[in-house]
Image (tube, rainbow, N blue to C red; front, side):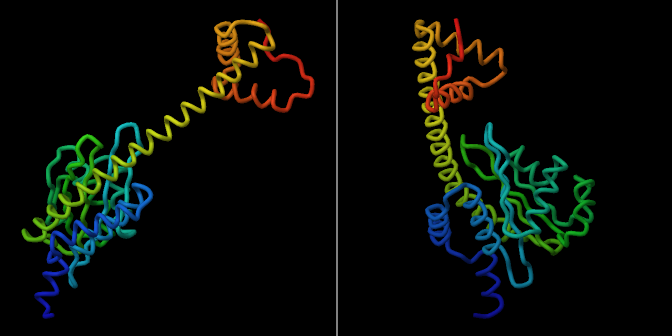
Length: 254
């Protein structure tokens, strides 16, 4: 394979079906979203790199009521992503907020985010590309790409990056859906466990105070409020106390 063909293969020559297969393999083999994002970042960096232009890749994902998730192909991308998040602004975060591709041909002459670019001066990165990813209602995501070269992203590589982001969006959307279902299951399990332990504690109070269920529940709620203890935590203490009962008296009286 000659130099030109090698460059084409590294910077965008991978066939689209191969991308889909690779992402499906990543999804099936990753237990968590962060792990999947890390593998996806490395795959994207490899896809977009060339022998004379080693591209770093990061992915930033924002989901409602969940912490921001950041994954990267290497320490350089991780540092630049985290630095941008600390400033709260930059090309990647702008692309994320506006849903628009952002290209920075030369960070040394671009004055759109001067504070961030000054902070990245020692990173060895000279150009950046941020491509938003469409993950539907599951959240917001952006593919963050960093090149050590000025003009490191040609029109062809930008098109390849958008193609990669498009294919990755589908897999990421599925990964986030799976994560949502898993989190919903965990939340439901926790809610059922909480309901069970509270119901058991109410039963204990009913037995010890010979009162109705409603009265027992109110006693538990009042005790939780007065002691500034979460209802479930207090219920667990009651059940644990009964489980290890050695003739202790009742905890609550009407």
